[in-house]
Length: 448
Image 1 (cartoon, rainbow, N blue to C red):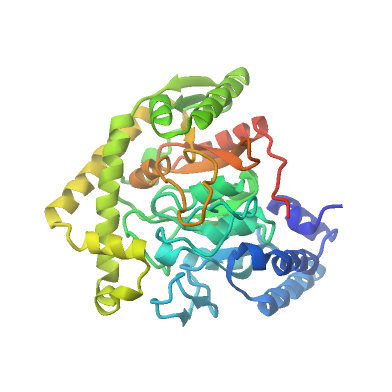
Image 2 (image 1 turned 180 degrees about the vertical axis):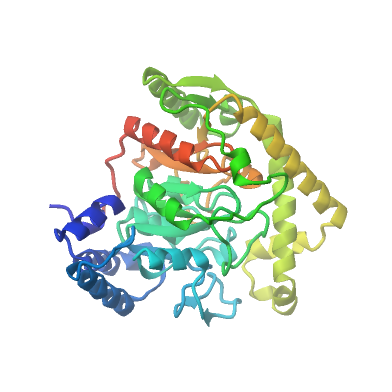
């Protein structure tokens, strides 16, 4: 019989409500796995065991008292350590950051708590959510990167230390850790989930989103976390103007950026994507070949300018006092950002708006588009967090995208596809992702 920690959110919720499973049993199962594996995986900046068990007992009392239960009642989750959780430390993965105990929750955390979730602790992040690697290792093979910057969140969910976790993304930091660790990750439309009380990397590129085992779980989390009035950006106006959904059900029109895939992915990954397209076509989908390779390349260059400028602006004062205490990769980015002229930044902003229009136009003829999430499975070595080349277009545009595992490579490491759509079309995107998930069963998990 499998441990409770291996259940999905929907399965665990059902068992808790019927009394088949207690929250104490579920949280204890997660903590037992953390005790056994954390010394190897290093997914957690800090685990708040006593707080979690106290909340677990309260959740069980609420069930016994037949009190109204939220959609996440008793579900243990992790929170990336650039997101504030009241009474827990925020350290940002870097010793130069003045560590502090958060005085209040980030809005996303408030929504989780209100729905009954139990915060197990803070998951490891790369330094200030950039690309200096975190201490986290990939639970599938500890000699390989878990991805970043939401390294701990991806690894903790994959290794069954918690049922879900919050991550953030500026380039590929939700999608890539999900792909490398064989789980599902969702980056919603920019502003759909509040970024208040989250340490910024780039104010206009940052996103927050969930990691979980299944699309169904990510859907539960997104519906809980999304704001009634999302923050807006660039040429977008209101959610209603963009929530145009073409198909009511399968078969779907799925775009495939084949040239960009062939240009950036390994030959094995390209072959894998071609085979995935064949699977979808056999199931009734229509594959439409799309090409925005040049636009993707231009967008990536502009993304670097925007990110480096905004990163250096946020860190300017602290970096001015303590530059040598910053890790090398983020230090180089800040130094570069401080040399970027205003007209270069504004040109990049304009290029972003142009790219949003180009991508929106390309997606008009399809329900969603697919790409690899990463050029390959998780690279060997821990000095890099991997390439975000296939994730950046969705961060740059702010359009929603989800990654789902699609198989294992010859070395037994997870590989994944990403599915992106027009802004504010998460409902349709999640429907398509669930359909794809059924066609790409992934019964695998890391072995110890």
